[in-house]
Length: 96
Image (cartoon, rainbow, N blue to C red):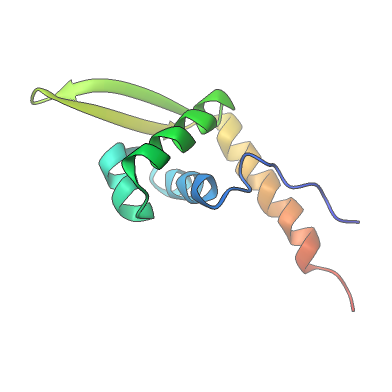
């Protein structure tokens, strides 16, 4: 009856990151930090978990001599998010 929820996306911060990236396609680390109000350290850890799962790509570069990290949703990340939403819907569709 209830579908298992993806443990990678079931974390509040990781779900927030993927939700943001679904709408903007890619975003800088500072933008993600501002939107989520996460600490830089926690955000970095959660970004790495999403990257290891194949849900996002991370590009590190320099802009005006400052490091810049850009995160981009992958097709696998889009599919995982869509499946997560479908699975979550099974919890909401229970008839009483």
